[in-house]
Image 1 (tube, one colour):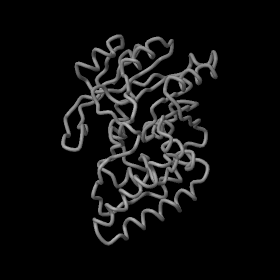
Image 2 (tube, rainbow, N blue to C red):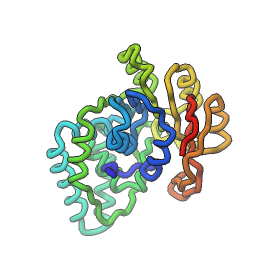
Image 3 (cartoon, rainbow, N blue to C red):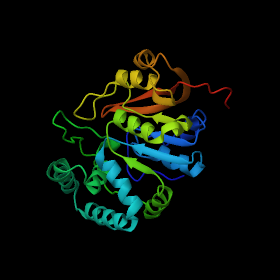
Length: 275
């Protein structure tokens, strides 16, 4: 199965087969929080939906996948350049200096620069993405000796996503715009949400409200699913949805903490009997 071309904390790569058991069958797949894109790739490979419309508020993610879609060989060339540069640095101190220069002097000045985003995700701590109150990326260095990427995977992803529609905006604006654009066809759509989890640390300058997301999704007359972990807060916030257990898994909470958690889906539709 195709992997995402960058590390991403909270990736669903290890649980997609379990997730898909509970996804609603429909014509159009809508994903407001794309993240690494691995769920999208595997759905396309499984040919589960006819149309895919996706979004992420992180402009670098969207610019990266649009570049892979339209110019895969240019992407491969640029990533090879930065991979070789990083790997040829003679000491970990030089690699660390390069990392901090990339995010302080380059990425934080223009977050549309997808190649710098890729470097940070490959060399930062455990694929975490975090911004301070000024909106500046500030994840610690990950002390990676070498970084790699799979050229063939970039080409495969490019082929997969040729018919995917990419957007970059707030989730509410994205969903409203998409459903309005689809008109009556919106009833034949399914919305999968993988937002920042309840009680998770803030990863952008603006606070994310899971309660606001729950209230908004509850108001829609569309089949929706929301990923989270099973805890008191998520059960309270998503109490008007049905809960299904996906899988017990390990999850990175912060740099010093990796905890066992139970991945769940909160849904607003009947799944019947699934095996």
